[in-house]
Image 1 (cartoon, helix red, strand yellow):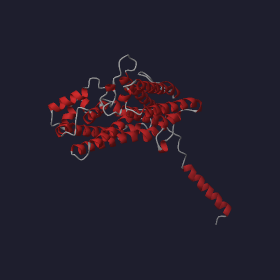
Image 2 (cartoon, one colour):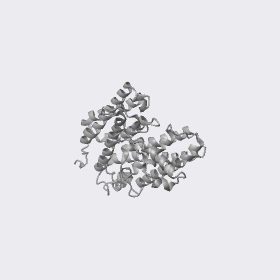
Image 3 (cartoon, rainbow, N blue to C red):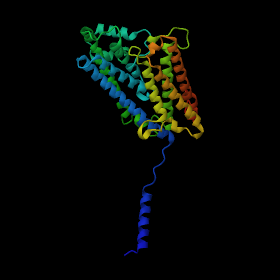
Image 4 (spheres, rainbow, N blue to C red):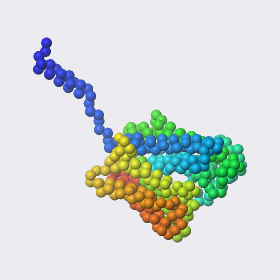
Length: 364
């Protein structure tokens, strides 16, 4: 029988053996960790919300055209789908950046009112529109811009039975098209070789390291913020002596232009800060050190200022364009977006060692 002292030594030896068989987990490289956190905490939730909203859009079209839903509810379903789409703009890596997928979701800017003209031409040619007819048609009539036109244009009265019969086939086919397209994109993200895995496991066929993945995310984020300047600057006729062009605004019929800009900003900010839950605080912000605290503070403040300016406007974009004070407020919002864009494109990219540009290569 072992003495107590010998027994204690035996137990300690046994525990030491156990600890040797369970080595500590290797520390994840910061850029790889940030990319993985962005994927789980920001990108996948946003793509899932988009897919869900498009499923609800298709359901809404069927309910509305069957007389089971009123126009107000149908409009809310459209606004939810378009908001979810706007939230994807700073996150549009992979499938949405390839081919004409984005055009199938939204046609903008519509400088010559092509949506109204092509919707009319399509329904005159094929009044009993089928899904196959829409799939072969122009992207101008396949997406949310055409859907908004049907629900909000002053020249269309869906309370009139004849007009409802005319336009419902297009509502139904657009809803189904958007549902199928979003489901296809999400499936591509979640596939065995999908982007969700490529953004989390390095090296792979797309990225050799986490820095490359973060670089692509930053490029898309920067491009989206620059795009928001265009969405505001175009109707403002910013940089020219021309009169404001309210009908050049995104989603002007529904009055959702500013809400959509804010939805895009919210996603860009989430990419900067990190997602919710366990991914909170693991955004691009986490990659900056103590010596870059001033830059962190300025980017935080720029997001807060820009979104506060939108919240304070209190009117649709078209109404603000109609008077001098409103245009001045929109000019200030544009300048705020411009500062946010420059902080990301210049200072943040430099601080992360990432070069942006057509022929850019990631920094060492």
